[in-house]
Length: 139
Image 1 (cartoon, one colour):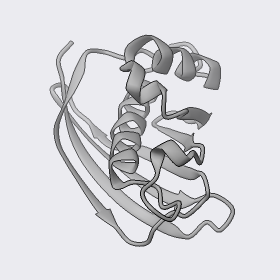
Image 2 (tube, rainbow, N blue to C red):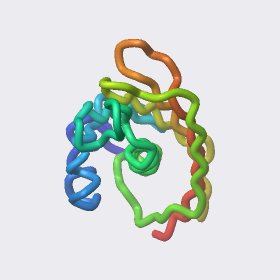
Image 3 (cartoon, rainbow, N blue to C red):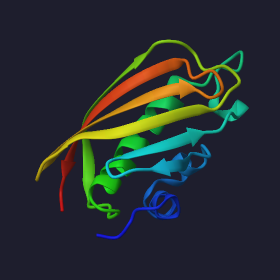
Image 4 (cartoon, rainbow, N blue to C red):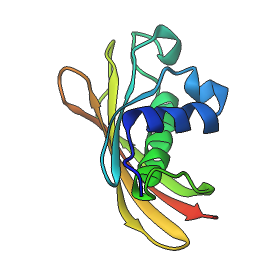
Protein backbone atom coordinates (compact mmCIF):
# COMPACT_ATOMS: atom_id res chain seq x y z
CA UNK A 1 0.00 0.00 0.00
CA UNK A 2 1.30 3.42 -0.88
CA UNK A 3 1.07 6.39 1.42
CA UNK A 4 -2.13 8.37 0.90
CA UNK A 5 -1.29 12.05 0.59
CA UNK A 6 -3.27 15.27 0.57
CA UNK A 7 -2.42 15.67 -3.12
CA UNK A 8 -3.70 12.15 -3.88
CA UNK A 9 -6.90 12.81 -1.94
CA UNK A 10 -7.50 16.08 -3.78
CA UNK A 11 -6.89 14.25 -7.08
CA UNK A 12 -9.59 11.69 -6.16
CA UNK A 13 -11.89 14.60 -5.33
CA UNK A 14 -11.20 16.25 -8.70
CA UNK A 15 -11.53 13.04 -10.72
CA UNK A 16 -14.56 11.42 -9.09
CA UNK A 17 -16.98 14.01 -7.71
CA UNK A 18 -19.64 16.02 -9.51
CA UNK A 19 -18.70 19.47 -10.73
CA UNK A 20 -21.29 21.08 -8.41
CA UNK A 21 -19.60 19.42 -5.41
CA UNK A 22 -16.23 20.73 -6.56
CA UNK A 23 -17.78 24.18 -7.14
CA UNK A 24 -18.24 24.45 -3.37
CA UNK A 25 -14.46 24.84 -3.14
CA UNK A 26 -14.13 21.85 -0.81
CA UNK A 27 -10.55 20.65 -0.41
CA UNK A 28 -8.61 18.12 1.62
CA UNK A 29 -6.38 19.63 4.32
CA UNK A 30 -5.03 16.45 5.97
CA UNK A 31 -5.20 12.68 5.66
CA UNK A 32 -4.60 9.76 8.00
CA UNK A 33 -4.85 5.99 7.67
CA UNK A 34 -8.64 6.03 8.02
CA UNK A 35 -9.56 9.71 8.17
CA UNK A 36 -9.48 13.03 6.35
CA UNK A 37 -9.85 16.67 7.30
CA UNK A 38 -11.52 18.84 4.69
CA UNK A 39 -12.52 22.47 4.40
CA UNK A 40 -15.38 24.25 2.69
CA UNK A 41 -14.34 27.88 2.26
CA UNK A 42 -16.88 30.55 3.10
CA UNK A 43 -18.72 31.84 0.04
CA UNK A 44 -21.94 33.82 -0.22
CA UNK A 45 -23.09 31.33 -2.90
CA UNK A 46 -23.12 28.54 -0.28
CA UNK A 47 -25.11 30.51 2.28
CA UNK A 48 -28.60 31.37 3.31
CA UNK A 49 -29.68 34.84 4.43
CA UNK A 50 -27.28 36.43 6.89
CA UNK A 51 -24.15 34.58 5.77
CA UNK A 52 -25.22 31.26 7.34
CA UNK A 53 -23.71 28.28 5.50
CA UNK A 54 -26.63 26.25 4.13
CA UNK A 55 -27.41 22.84 5.55
CA UNK A 56 -27.28 21.40 2.03
CA UNK A 57 -23.68 22.60 1.76
CA UNK A 58 -22.73 20.91 5.03
CA UNK A 59 -24.55 17.67 4.13
CA UNK A 60 -22.79 17.51 0.77
CA UNK A 61 -19.47 18.17 2.47
CA UNK A 62 -20.13 15.47 5.06
CA UNK A 63 -20.91 12.84 2.44
CA UNK A 64 -17.85 13.84 0.41
CA UNK A 65 -15.54 13.77 3.43
CA UNK A 66 -16.74 10.31 4.49
CA UNK A 67 -16.11 8.91 0.99
CA UNK A 68 -12.58 10.31 1.02
CA UNK A 69 -12.03 8.84 4.50
CA UNK A 70 -13.02 5.50 2.94
CA UNK A 71 -10.37 6.02 0.26
CA UNK A 72 -7.82 6.62 3.01
CA UNK A 73 -8.89 3.42 4.79
CA UNK A 74 -8.63 1.52 1.49
CA UNK A 75 -4.98 2.50 1.14
CA UNK A 76 -5.52 5.52 -1.06
CA UNK A 77 -7.70 3.77 -3.63
CA UNK A 78 -11.33 4.76 -4.04
CA UNK A 79 -13.27 1.57 -4.76
CA UNK A 80 -16.76 2.02 -6.18
CA UNK A 81 -19.11 2.80 -3.31
CA UNK A 82 -22.47 4.40 -2.72
CA UNK A 83 -24.17 6.05 0.22
CA UNK A 84 -26.74 3.75 1.82
CA UNK A 85 -27.74 6.02 4.69
CA UNK A 86 -26.63 9.37 6.08
CA UNK A 87 -27.89 11.22 9.11
CA UNK A 88 -26.82 14.74 10.00
CA UNK A 89 -27.59 16.74 13.12
CA UNK A 90 -27.12 20.51 13.08
CA UNK A 91 -26.08 22.08 16.38
CA UNK A 92 -25.28 25.70 15.52
CA UNK A 93 -24.88 27.78 12.38
CA UNK A 94 -21.59 28.48 10.68
CA UNK A 95 -21.74 32.18 9.92
CA UNK A 96 -19.30 33.92 7.60
CA UNK A 97 -16.60 31.32 8.25
CA UNK A 98 -15.14 28.21 6.65
CA UNK A 99 -16.49 24.81 7.64
CA UNK A 100 -13.93 22.21 8.79
CA UNK A 101 -14.96 18.57 8.37
CA UNK A 102 -13.14 15.75 10.15
CA UNK A 103 -14.28 12.37 8.80
CA UNK A 104 -13.31 8.96 10.15
CA UNK A 105 -14.05 5.39 9.15
CA UNK A 106 -15.48 3.55 12.15
CA UNK A 107 -15.62 0.14 10.47
CA UNK A 108 -14.64 -1.01 7.00
CA UNK A 109 -16.22 -4.34 6.13
CA UNK A 110 -16.20 -6.26 2.85
CA UNK A 111 -19.54 -4.88 1.69
CA UNK A 112 -20.46 -2.11 4.16
CA UNK A 113 -18.52 0.72 5.76
CA UNK A 114 -19.55 2.97 8.63
CA UNK A 115 -18.23 6.52 8.98
CA UNK A 116 -18.72 9.69 10.97
CA UNK A 117 -17.83 13.33 10.50
CA UNK A 118 -17.57 16.26 12.89
CA UNK A 119 -18.16 19.68 11.35
CA UNK A 120 -16.82 22.77 13.10
CA UNK A 121 -16.59 26.46 12.38
CA UNK A 122 -13.04 27.40 11.39
CA UNK A 123 -11.37 29.70 13.86
CA UNK A 124 -13.72 29.01 16.72
CA UNK A 125 -13.59 25.21 16.67
CA UNK A 126 -17.20 25.21 17.86
CA UNK A 127 -19.17 22.14 16.80
CA UNK A 128 -21.73 22.96 14.12
CA UNK A 129 -22.92 19.55 12.93
CA UNK A 130 -22.31 15.83 13.26
CA UNK A 131 -23.05 13.19 10.62
CA UNK A 132 -22.90 9.43 10.32
CA UNK A 133 -23.03 7.43 7.15
CA UNK A 134 -23.26 3.86 5.92
CA UNK A 135 -21.73 3.06 2.55
CA UNK A 136 -22.00 0.01 0.30
CA UNK A 137 -18.59 -0.99 -1.02
CA UNK A 138 -19.28 -2.27 -4.54
CA UNK A 139 -15.84 -3.22 -5.79
